Image 1 (cartoon, rainbow, N blue to C red):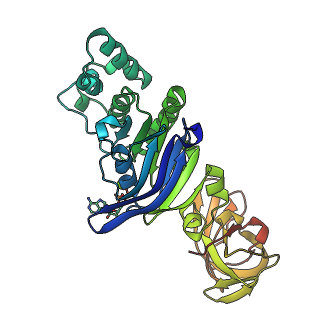
Image 2: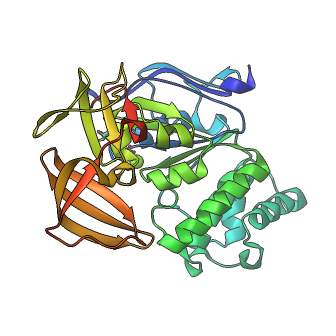
Image 3: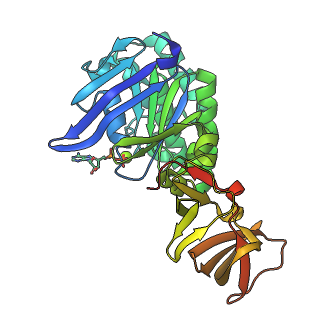
Length: 341
Ligand SMILES: Nc1ncnc2c1ncn2[C@@H]1O[C@H](COP(=O)(O)OP(=O)(O)O)[C@@H](O)[C@H]1O
Ligand SMILES: [Mg+2]
């Protein structure tokens, strides 16, 4: 077993009855890596995690963890932890007893149990709350209990299914930092599911973008953010202006448009709003809407190429609705996509 493929999903196909939810998934995760599964609702993220945890039968393919084929191993013998979106804590038990639960099931008791549980509770910053019942805790604190409850079992892989989606914006940020800290300190291999690209970009060592039960792209946050391979991924990470490229021409709703320095071997070009050269270029559009976004102002332009979203530094004088503005789509500021779709 190499550390480079600590967890290996090899041609994994998963189905609910006749409905295939995940097909031919290949993924290799390093020991200690924090991987985010990113994708829209229904793309197969939860199904994949449930299969790794042993809560979902594998139709074909293999799951190998730390050199051991666990494809048919019962869930309780996989050394895999799964934290659900709903924390599923026991409301009648204290924080201590919630965290102790799994270890008691394994027959641990007395001082060894107490030491382990208190250390896990401390690692998520909840020591002062060890004797509280869980309904007396805030959403963020309950999330930490769920995390401690999984961590205390010392899983080889810890998986979290949209762990932050029930929290408000401020708590999400706080828990994001907390998760990253716990992961780095413990060195646990972690798979984190989200449909929020910001969360994935901020947290992950590597991002796996899923679509319709298959992997669309795997890469570092920088790869995914700056070098999306398909229009699907580009759209997911905030590119707004995406056009197919054919014979050096952009294919737009208003017809084909020649583009200077168009790269070869590229199926499509995509520009983030701020990559559109506002006020500088061969095209023109009419301002349809304008919104202030703090450091920038965002514009929606009606243009012969169809709608274009552009962004200008908020320090620039604002354009009014109905103004005609010129703009350019410089090939140099575009992401080059291998697939339009
Ligand atoms: N219990 C189930 N029975 C039948 N189909 C399901 C079940 N759970 C999920 N699915 C289907 O499997 C696909 C993947 O779902 P899921 O893994 O939950 O997606 P995600 O977590 O990415 O939102 C979807 O098409 C979904 O409708
Ligand atoms: Mg899900």
